[in-house]
Length: 75
Image 1 (cartoon, rainbow, N blue to C red):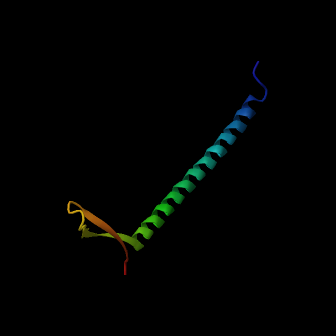
Image 2: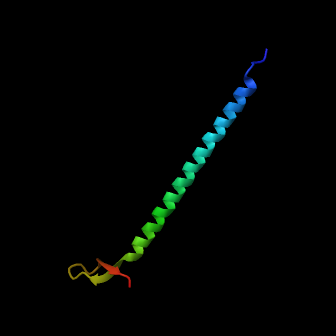
Image 3: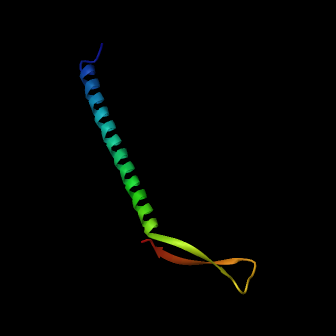
């Protein structure tokens, strides 16, 4: 014998599955947007605070160059 409520149960489960999938998609889209905003903010900060390396000869050690950090603000 077939179950009495099998069709109703399947419809109910299908609706629940669709709702769950919709919530998951919204969550992933939200996370993508957050990631993009974070990347854009990071790029903007890097543009503002560029680190320029000056090559300065190390008097004690002639085989290499010393890197000196200097922050430069773009105009």
